[in-house]
Length: 72
Image 1 (cartoon, one colour):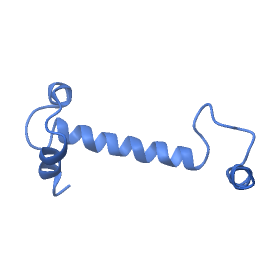
Image 2 (image 1 turned 180 degrees about the horizontal axis):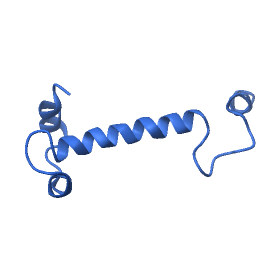
Image 3 (image 1 turned 120 degrees about the vertical axis):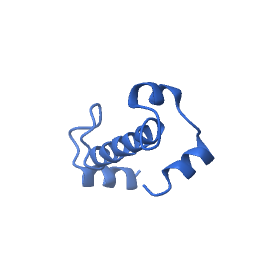
Image 4 (image 1 turned 180 degrees about the vertical axis):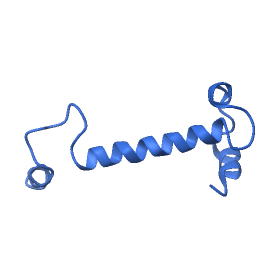
């Protein structure tokens, strides 16, 4: 990302745990943590979209689940 450093400095600052285990310096540590966190959110959102998360209602198709919410 072009603005990784500026965004991190403005909103969160350095994450010590990420700096320790993912490396130190530009392009590592905190910046890598936020990129991995974003990737994880993308994967979870796709799993949620297709109702594939564990513990969800497995007997309803996504469209049937949507209809049951709308009809309430």
